[in-house]
Length: 470
Image (cartoon, rainbow, N blue to C red; front, side, top):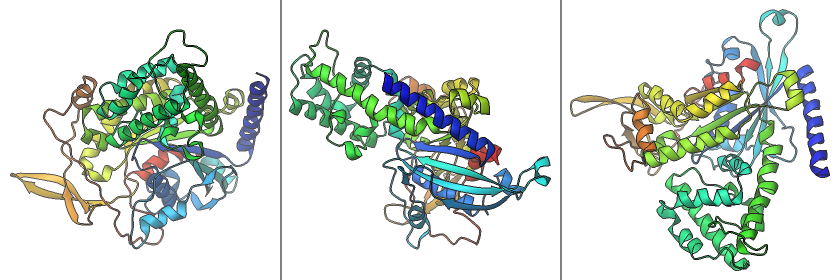
């Protein structure tokens, strides 16, 4: 108790010092970027930074359109214990002579981009340019979903997981082992490890199959914790009156240790310091997989929003209550897989997915928005006649074999409920439409001086996230 109280006081003092410094010296905006599986976090951050350094394609960013951004530069991030986001390597992968998609996020990383901005309004004539720091924090989406575990007991979590797994073929091996396990029996470490290994195998298969509720996230990205007791547990059916040294009690203890030693430190050291948050999602990929994947994504995004502490970061409020997430952007990536006439429908589907939770965040004072984006545009738009009808489609280089191919994903409904209602009702497949997806490779770029990589709406995303502070 004394240790926790001292730690809380230390954090409050750090928050007070940081808040006063930002208010009177150089403001800092901390933007967290995360996403569900295969959403493209690395490409999003790389494109955002590259287009803020070379702003020729950033007309939708108000300060740039007004000519008030005089310069931008990268400098060391303030957190010495966090890895630097490998911006130069990732940009080289996307814009080099043999472009390819960079590797995905495996751990927390950070990058600081500083802008020299001329003030607007009356202040423009009274003061010179000011410096605004943008700290971009990249972390795996699986870790964000883990925040929902903090309010759950081991018994509640186990019951929820086992009920959910009952209908998933990917969980057959784990469920067979779990059902044959006597939780009231004595702990045998070899059996505990076998259960954890089977559960981890399920999580891996579930993620590959397109499910998004793959928690605990560190089971998929263990890092230095691989093989430790804190990652050696699994859900088991509840056992009444289990003895202290039973398998069930030990699994419960390790679950609580996971929350205390993995989830809470992540929340305290990274997540609780975020001002604005980007959540990326491959909504097209979920739609292609079918109604169950869409419903799974909807539930995952609702859980994500419940993990946030939304509200406004007014000066006095931050002194008393600490940081709050002021803006939350849900960005549907890979918009370049669709003709622009379908972008509004894609955005509407994402807005409907997060409606209930986003209303709660707005009521608390946060600004929540959905948007369809492409961090790096890999296609061009085209038209093709098919059975007497002109199809609006896109064309690009296929990732598998490098061939040029035309692609038509299918007509997304203007009414999101045409997708979301069958998903809620447990439909197995779409009744009147098949939605397709392709994987495109990045094209060789010939960038003009001052231009960042080609994109779709990254300038509008930047305006929403940081425009009010410029």
